[in-house]
Length: 461
Image (cartoon, helix red, strand yellow):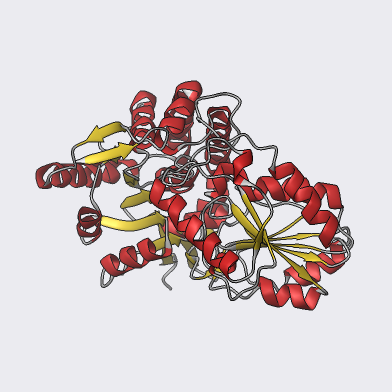
């Protein structure tokens, strides 16, 4: 039995039975059948129905925001923002589909027609996480459908209602029966489904360890597997940065969604010329957060997803402090903060270094370490000192120098004067243990399709 335990009060908010073997077989067969007809529809027909799916989903924005608060603890005032982000990404991927899926024409040869076509892989399995349950899911759902695939969604046990609402929106839109389905599955069942010959591709967003399990399950299948995994994303504040702007935006980048973002800021390197003023301003803004019940409209920092996640972050902090780090924000400023619960105050650590887990191991919580650096060279070495590489941000007023530095940063996306953001027209990807593959942008269609070449001799003489 799947249970969603609400971080608000540890009550059971949603309960669903896991699909049984017969239900799984029926769903996969229905998806395979639907895919056969769907691949023969026109792109215009797919775009119309996918657009209607988006319309049907966003019509329930307020209810979805409340459900998000109950399921994963995000303050209710921020829920509609994720729905808007879902819409932006979905419509972007619908709009770029024509260019992404267009035949690749080759130079003409006398009497020969040649081109490359992107064709669907068949049935795609999307495994979506809880932290941004709409934004992560849409990255593959809409492009998979637009590419001519059927899709089976396995959503996190923490956010099952998100998956159910997405599929229900597809039904309201008039998608063919079996084309877009949800299955509530255990980890073992998910691995078994990946082994099914009906599954033609997998899109997974989650932890590094979870990605390794997906990869192991797909071994020997020779199907495309997209893995968007963890991040330990750095920011570098150069001496020429706009100090107030950098402080304000990096506080938000570190603590939005209680720090539970794969592209959230987890470590900051500040040039010595700005360090003291930066830390002072950062701490002052951090103290202004309101930690509490996410259903309260005044709350700006909700609980972490579960108590065990909060305890993991607390352990990182305790180890760092024991090794000489200093915590600059008094947790007693946040009355809701309490050990043994998922309610955790934001923490700002200084006197940290890379011997501490909090600076090298993904925290996925409301904590950030700030280090002083003397130069671009030192900052670059520290930014790249990680086995993860999703995003990185550089804060500077010099575009040329920031560009030169960005070229050397080991990350899938490099920002200047921005962080914790995703542009759906750019490739969302990472390096090292952050995974493999690309979602979003025109390139996001590549792992949801396969190339098929046509070489036709049109004249025989």
